[in-house]
Image 1 (cartoon, protein in one colour):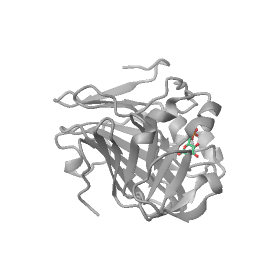
Image 2: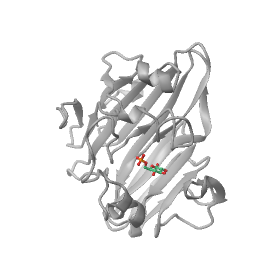
Image 3: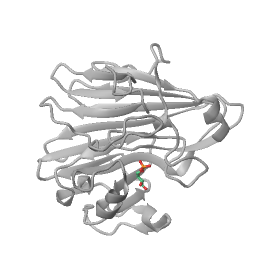
Image 4: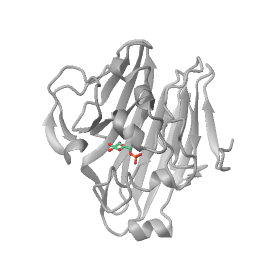
Length: 293
Ligand code: BG6
């Protein structure tokens, strides 16, 4: 299918009726629905679907920079580019294909990208939907430069929630975090599960590889599993910042929560020819379930 600007979108489906939509604009997952047709990701009603602007919702990819602490535009350029479909990518583990519906995308830097970030790379993204409706994203970034370089990265995931005041995150208790609202000053999380009553913009450091978002009202738990991504960003703009964003409704902060698996505090460094892999797997279950760490 095509979006409003004629940019290709790919729809993945599983036999039970779950589906996910991936846009070549940003290599961005723009929708993920369970087998009952319920949308699990948030997209703003005011989102602007026009490159070179990132879409406000779904899963934008922040690369090669997270945030604005660096020389590049906020969250890097990958989310603003048109990606291509790759028919025959280098193989992944058989478990990454078996029983799954998937698509492989590729991003290479343009001449303009090389002017602002002079490091050549091949960024391969596989998005897959499993038979049980889980969504997974696998990023492989290869340095095809003659010199080493570093980058930061995030899967900037907008979850749809019933009411932000009724939501809690489990798995980040007692961790250190950098507070984006205080020039990335370092604090330690004190409480039990994380709940929301004002703006939050934090980078939790060295987080466990499985965390959960509990949505009481909908009796739904999102389980986030990650690999290769030590940090976890938690963001809700709350009332004042929502009003300041042109592509976001004034009240929409109540129905979304961004929780991003990321590598920020310690950037990833790749030597020439080296490849890094970062994985995200999202599941929805009726109650909490985290089996590892
Ligand atoms: C979050 C950042 O991940 O993304 C916030 O922590 C930022 O600081 C937010 O405001 C949205 O960024 P953008 O560029 O998509 O408006």
